[in-house]
Length: 579
Image 1 (cartoon, rainbow, N blue to C red):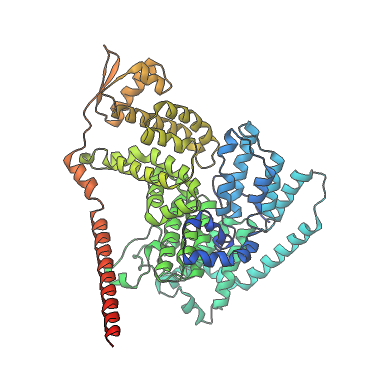
Image 2 (image 1 turned 60 degrees about the vertical axis):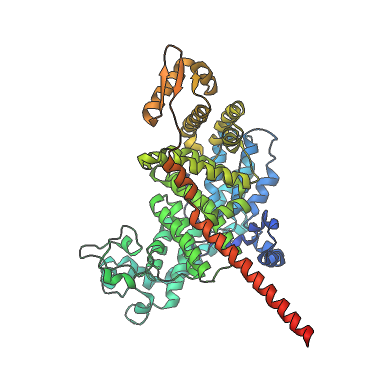
């Protein structure tokens, strides 16, 4: 009821203290029918009940697909908003809809502005952002239209309940704002729920702490994302066990593990996990709070803190799985949500290693499974990320490794592409170059890529860089199968004239340290040898040797056990026959 969502590339979480993933539990069934597992049958049994819980959260998806008729060809054909939206919190959809509005205004996409406004209004109804909802209502029904009575009543209820929550946790809220008193409690190791509860002077009980978390959630639903972020930070710190700060360190952020300085090793056994804000343990309820923290960091555009929050959620999920507090299918669902939420973080933090982190996450075994089974449309973002960070990874690799790291990335990407039933111009561009070696088709797809990139909310700011990296990629692949390349022919492949192609290749050779030179007399590029060294061959072929050996041993043990069981059964049957 306070603020409108910012017009920025950042989403938020629908419920700060409640993981939005709980609103979409059956979405992981998409393309999951290929796996005949017990967990699948369990989900199928409960799907009808879960679908009723999903109705309000999926309202945008249905409205978007029903109201907006997509043309058969054009940018709309490759718009992923309807595919991404079921895995995002409703607050995260506002920036995506605002970007669609900008595309409509520029004539880049043929959606209706009124339909987008209607979809936005549907998203706002379950939230407490009633002032913003009223503004959208007028934009849909006209400025002269009367605001419905239920909206006015909802506004009164929102302010009333907000005040009630504030009164219920005022003791803890005042203590959190008293920096001097809080610093003393932190220094004395008394900044915990247990220590505060036994001290009657503070009037803080576990119920007050729970009310404080509810207020953070309510602030979030009202659109006050910064307040929600600060309150969640305070809430998590009450359960954290950070290392003791040094003498002149007095910073609230250190409590949550951000810019924390390490201290004596004797304290290390009593500290929590640094990957999850120094929490010593994680419960399903705390995971929901971590999801809310991630959403708040994304919304307020704190990309460094958001990266820390992504790692915290990831670690918490794996901790719950390892302790058997989360089923494998639930974990798959949570990982699918994290893949989508992390798009906001990685693509806004691309210059500081965000894309490399994204590639590592998407290509890890458990998250790769989520991509191939639940959300193959994420292949677009993985493909774009690999192309954009390929050269940077190669430059950071050891000088003796040549291009082996880049080749490994492309090999892994192609393996994922073969497992995904998804295609768009970006994916097809890589497929034409690396699988089919069809340069003419790749050139056509590259021309389509530019329009797809400019219409994608996450990729639009990377359009120019992607096109440059794509041209380099074409050049590299073309050079692999040619010793000499005519400049005019290469210019056609790169959509340049001969002089432009020559200047571009000179810069490329200089900046990328390519083993090539230009023969001005013959007007061609002469490529040097690019054979893989013996060291690289050995490393590539033995990279997974330990894993393959362990798998072989496991299979052999399984065969031996089966043989022993069969032999024992035969001996038992023979003894029974004798008797």
